[in-house]
Length: 335
Length: 211
Image 1 (tube, each protein chain N blue to C red):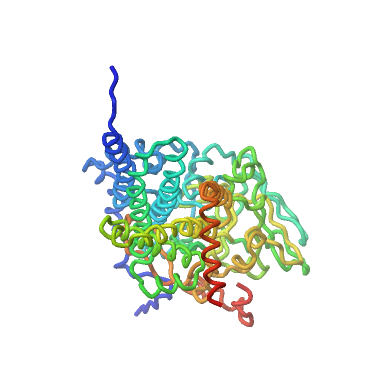
Image 2: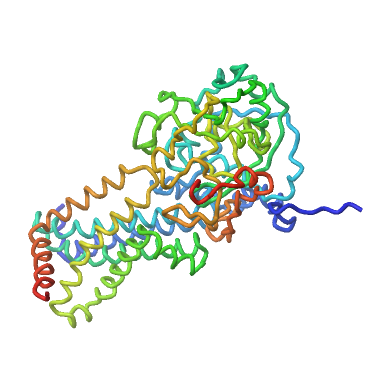
């Protein structure tokens, strides 16, 4: 007899939004005439900018279907609808408002692209655009994404383990940390050029991991979501996904990965070291100075009345896989 | 053709415009939010919209008196209360959105956040003061209160400062808009420079005389 022991982070089957309800939602609205009225209101009111419906249709960036191994847990987590994953983004390079990246990034050039992996290693390499999706077998990973702002999503990423990439360059014994850097191109990324649009953070965006965090099998280099290559607002053509840390650690549109000996100064740490630590592990017991981290709102389908406030889990529910990395550390000090 | 508007006509027209300008965006907002047409996170959107809306209305309310004085348009003063009440209504919805849709009536979390987070504490103090002003805006109460009414309603200057700080502390990194709002508040308060100086002095003197 097969006995399944569900892991702490698996949701029950009964919690899933029926697919047909989700897929038909839009038709349902159209049929009831709501879309027309909604669109009318949206143009009438400057403040409403309602239209992720209309924006979705105006999307210019072409994503490409990917070949990948599906995640075995597909049925167990309620996915955040693709339309929400791709329109609610913190990617200040394209504007600090959540809806701006989807609007201001559609002409972003991802091909050609160069990702350099260098520093304390024996075989530094540079990956071209095609290498990103062809060098490794791609797999789907359905992960929770917990933003430091206390909202969360569930995203079906596609990518490969960062560990596989790092093994290729053969880190040497001085490689204690991994530093990531986003493309710096103010012509394409208007937020880097305009303090008001870009939210006043330092560019290029820098993030970092300890080498053992980087080598953890959960740490993903993502090149796609929902079966296709990443749209620019989600970090095309390649981004990091570290599911047990707050979202800002998962740096987007990466051009450089460097192995170094010292802990780097990361972008949000630089801005407010008391609010955004280097580790930034999801920790319901350690509040952000300005809000509680004990619970979160899970963004799925559903409007204003969605009852979506849930308890935040230690390490975002991935403690089994990563808690050992921090065994003798005071996580209140190293937040 | 020359149409002469009587003062009461002007007031009526202005009030109609204010009602429409304040109510239609709210109806639109909640309609879109209810049907999940307001971006991925309608909760954040309604909180921000009503919050900044309340701030804008407060600023507008405090613009009325200087404007009426400068251009000798006394009738403008007759819409000041309406604007103030809409500022309160937006502030009420702002707090209600936070409690009902963000925290989803987790009351202990609500009270904890008010006590623990300075920016929410400031916002909440401003809201309670604003509620006091809204309640005492009733004509019957105003008559009963006599001179103390004006004293109480001078709190609007304190409220707008609290709100500006609340906004400044609430943002993650983008400081330009809060700083711009500080500038607006500064300009509006500068029109009351002598009055505020007098108020400060009398408050200060009362305190020292007690010692």
